[in-house]
Length: 110
Image (cartoon, rainbow, N blue to C red; front, top):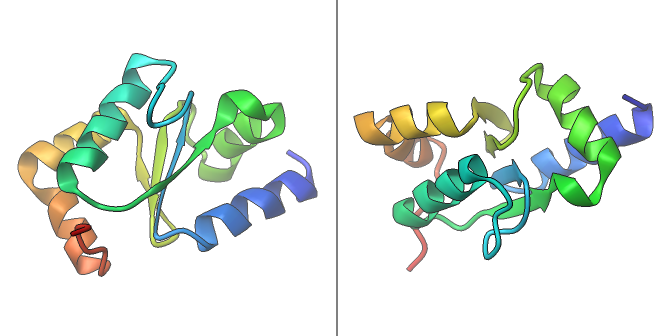
């Protein structure tokens, strides 16, 4: 990963409270895992931004090195890497994801 890609990813993570690196967009997810991640975030009712890794090969490969996580989607909350869709689902079902959002000061949108 280039320093430029690293800096771009860091800037995205730092400037968004809830950020999902995904395949596709929230309206048109391009894989089942991204679709599931969007459904979880929508159900929580939190505002989030997304980055379509299919639009940028540097980001697509760079995010895997950045997080040391091999798969996409990847969720970040207040700069902290949370995990992919399986971890999101486990945390959602146990209530941990809702608690994490509350602990980090991410309020549900009105």
